[in-house]
Amino acid sequence: MTSSAESSMAVETSDPASASGLTRALQVIYTVAEENSTGIGVSAISRRLGLPKAVAHRILKTLSNDGFLRFDEETKRYTLGVGALSVGLSAISSLGLQAAVHPFLRNLVQATGETATLSIRQGWTRIYLDQVESPREVRMTVAVGRPYSLHAGSSSKAILAAMSDRDISEFLRLQPFEALTPHTLVTPDALLAEVGRIRRLGYAESTGERQSAAGSVAAAVLRPDGTVFGSVSICGPITRFDETTRASYGPLVAKVAGHISTVVLHRTSTFR
Image (cartoon, rainbow, N blue to C red; front, side, top):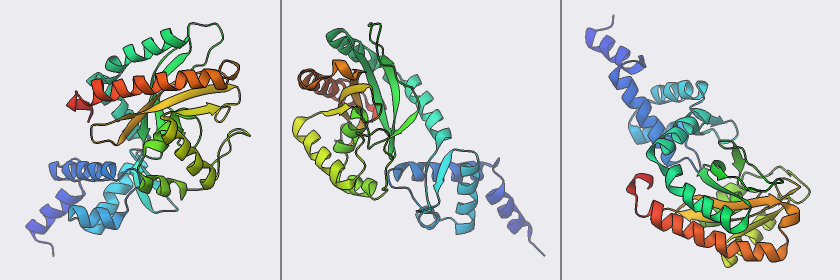
């Protein structure tokens, strides 16, 4: 026979509509978000939040079924999913980040005549948050909100190179990477060499790595603590991105990314 106190506790634990249930679900979400670059398992969640393992598993399972979290069958870890990404994008938009960065992108388009973009890191991927399209008849456009791996393209590689060595090693452990084109870097040695090159130059380049006909240069945008927030790029048809042009555009994009880091992220605590 179950006591009234035990019955109350059972309802409080399992009912997702209860205040306690919602609080625990939010605690789980925040904890997953803190470890999103590497993911976190059920046992770690249970220990950190002081929850019974069965309760932690039930919450994680529910959030995964709804698409808010993503479960990796190989690592047995949870990261933020598409649902969380959608909410995050809406929050960033409402907080005014796009409006704050948009003028910088417009300036890049005016200076180069090419499409300018802003990407943000999302775990082991990055997504385009905003773009200002080139005024030219033949131009590149990007899919805002779609996730891309960090191994291909200048926007992705700029973020990768700005990550900590530990995070880079963890990312490379996820091999193999998809060869999107014949020019995509897919081995740890090749990507590590590219990371070193990007760090020396201060910007990343791509010639047909993610899309065969596309060229681009990008630089990382950093938070006040030095961690990578995302990247800024300019992109266009590969025929307009020869070596000389890339060498000219690279320092310009790096300068703009630095300004965004300082003017927007460093001075506005909302985006930290």
